[in-house]
Length: 436
Image (cartoon, rainbow, N blue to C red):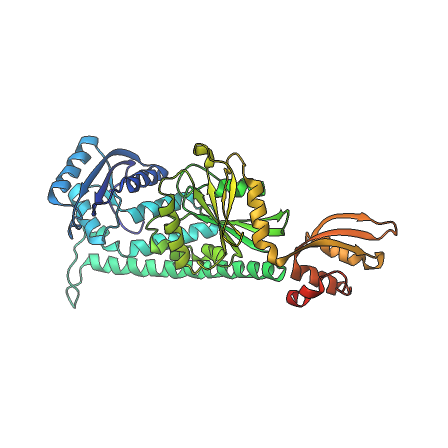
């Protein structure tokens, strides 16, 4: 850290205030999950209600005294608020409590810092932390003399503050430059996938909805998956082959949450661009969560913020094993197109319906058929193998190749043209012009 502050601990007093007449018990449950995910131990939870926050301490005088007593009783070393605090409020509360005070944004940033595993992920978390810290830098220097600016009136505290602000700005610029290079690399990867016409499916959803478990089951991978918030931060891409749609790229992404700090959305924009550039979104929903429809709204809000709300989307209601009498099924709209799939990724039940739905949604750009190729055109077979577009091969009575092909129409047309084979007879005449 660039500035001093009281030594932190792991035993925390939690504070949640209700500012409306609505029942926010589920917000408290999620708050507790966040604290647990951060590795803190809860000493007690203090709840209250107000019409609006106090400008100085956020809480009223009575609640302030109750929190102080709880800190002394449990010998807690930090207080965590389930709200966003202003820098001045944090500074005033720390002076009153003589211990660390964290708000919801700082808590989420801490979880992200623990979860980041890749170079890119660590850069993005550090950027968000520095941007958040920049508004709170002043509170670390209350132990130094700080006077108003002007000739002959500059105190040592202000000089140190200016120095730290400059160091912080320089570090932010450095990180942004490095993330710019990461973004360029991702752009190159996406352009390569577009040239090969391989569709990208991005898995999105509320945190802890089971996205990584579904990703691992579909791709036979070992991406870290746990029953905790923000288990996945770094995007993971895997190439798989769908039975009725051919090769696709599946992307696992960071989970969303209610009141996701805007700084995090901005810092993780390079990661979220995988979602923006996807051909199809798999919106994973925890079907056992009573707030699932509220969570869907929160995810949709973030998708709109990153301009991904118009991408075709298939909802996946996961964890039906936690529901009574729930069976795997596919729901369709009035036109018969799949809009929702019910399954359990943990038990891998309902995957047939999911794969069928994915195939239908991607089928507009996919061709499935059989080609009979002469030996002189064996290059076609080689290119089909190279692009993973060949499902099965055999020979007819004349010894010609009989190839069962499946894949993007534009890729198949490209294979024929590059091999010098006339597409006539291989592609439907009424669709060939559209393919080009």
